[in-house]
Length: 349
Image 1 (cartoon, helix red, strand yellow):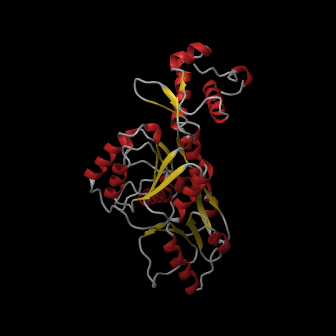
Image 2: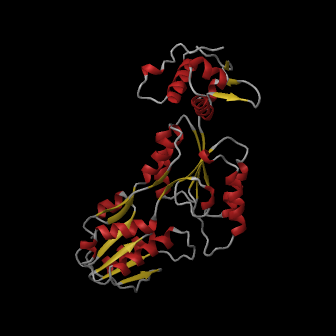
């Protein structure tokens, strides 16, 4: 039986015992002390030899299996895997669309997880059927799943497809699925989440900036129209309405923009989508309304161009979502985290 001479828990008082076991086995594999395909002690044997609990050994072995350093067959021994697979996570990153926001999260995740790991990107274009086909395609493969749920539905149809997606998600171990946005579509699965509370975000940020916001005679939210109650647009709209009603502020919600639309002085325009932002800025200039002096403007999510133009933004740390997801996989953490949102105030406000 393999004996780990360097396994000494007293030398690592600040580390958890399962982490010490993981690091010791990896070190012995990498330096050649433990050979390729060599059989490791069973959990019971390891527990007795090193006077450590079975649960601790089992947790260490699970982490090593997830990182492909070891493998086992049911009813047979645990052994060291082939070197080309060792330490590699296989990760499926699934997005509705590869817009600038999702790309920030994806790039941050890839940089943190390490480019030696296998990260595969799949795009389902907001279509339930395409997402279902992706899950079926990978259902017998050992992947971690990072999913951003966002569908193009105009109503609550396609419930059958959502139920089928739920069934396929339920086949995946919970620790291998992380939702990178609100999991409102599949809420009964108790999945891990790094989520954005869009309704609370806009309410709380506007409340924190009430002294500035209350100086405007009217607040106008420019947002795409949706009938999907799970949509971020629906939630932003609800948070906006609730804030204006709670603080007795005059407001209006607009779902489209025309060339004839007026930009009224002393109004504050909150624009959710960048396509609409371009049109609103064009109206500011064509109507000779000075941004920040005559009327206010706030956009969603920061960019270099918005910084250059001095546009205030509701900023969500999109990179942080990717970093947290990477750490959850690497460190075997099970978490449900709310991502933060703040207002970056510039000359447009």
